[in-house]
Image (tube, rainbow over all chains, first blue to last red; front, side, top):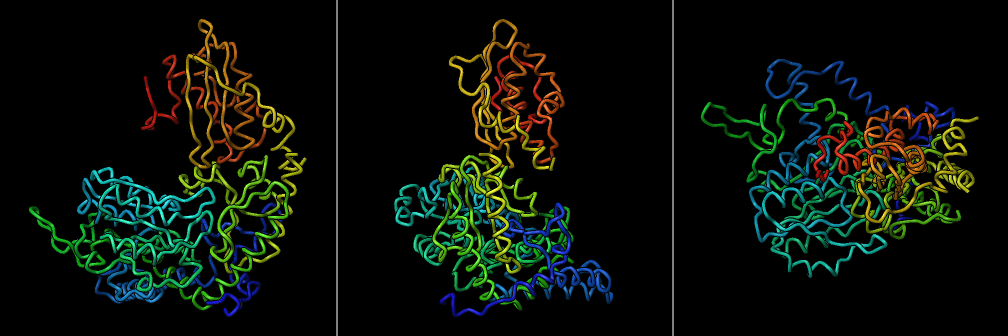
Length: 414
Length: 142
């Protein structure tokens, strides 16, 4: 879809929904440019969780009293909301997890330990967040499978034509890829990668943590086998995310965490597992968080993902232009038409930590570090970058304040 | 003086831009490197002894002004001391020298060099390992 054909959102009006912006930082209004790390929360989400605790809270799935029924309904209703949000065929294919890291551990342990061995190849892109990288590297090591990365070039561009050469390393069994990279904002060609994986007999495991908040996510259109997303990046609470997986794969898998709720029958001799998705939801769930997750999905859906996408695109375009005017700034990542609202950069002679500290004094919150992308940072030849990331409540004048802060940093270190 | 000016006071910026004891020591008696997992900053330190005492100590690394300046100051502070003295050195001694207000996150930056130096002395001279390094599986003990 052409970006200009998308509807526009009113960021000023949206901003009024977020109580955090009523509180100054260092005596200055907050310019929160770290939404890729975690988004702020609208009152609608906070209220939904509070109301749930105040009126409907009990433990779920076992009680037969009114509150337990209501609580179970809210939790399973949230699952249905997530299903609709990612266009999954069935709610039983949606597993609540703590976050994407937890989701990927469910797959790496639950599928990987039983299905990987010597001669097999596990592939991850060099653009992976550690969440969809480290579990695969570790489980490949545990099972004797080969672990290899699909490389990026010095600009951070994925080298798709190197894919076939990796076939010499083993039989592809897993391809782990992000839908959107978290430090550069790069949108990856997921359908193309999934097709390649399937053509070579591998499952495709997609990290949609950075994609879900900013763009319409359709797991059927992606064609992947597993997709992970997290609530806290899309206006929801921490401690809750979801793993979507194909039912037949989830059914065939071993559980990862063991204990309460995930069982069908326990005897001293043997334990059998609950049906999916419950097999993967051991222990008391993050119930109110699931309610908050659903409220967040309603919130961003009402704002409109195409409008959010357009808003972020305009902010990214503006930020790239403004930052590019500052002497000594090096911008990382792809052209604006292949990125979400994330801009990573360095400032010559000033370490990202110092940049972040200096702009913080102006009330501007940016992230400095490796963004859980250490292999990518190594390829880019830096230890860390400064990252500004935007969301539906971000205003262009917040980028202006970042630019002013960068000029201050240059002066201080000159 | 603003919070920022006191953090980036002149002496910090001077050590950052003109680090003391920056470089390598050929045939060093003790060496170690370490990272700050929060930001990926790296420091490596090499020590040469003259008898019991540190005759020369040099560092290399990349990182923020706080981590690099505090390591630079540390190089000046430990020359002529014994391995045991440095292993027992309190972090406050270094922090007093650095002399700026630090949040818990930036504290890790300021103490990176001291941790790596103590690791080098542990590897080279068997002095006690700093608590915060215990149990890390990438330590190459010898």
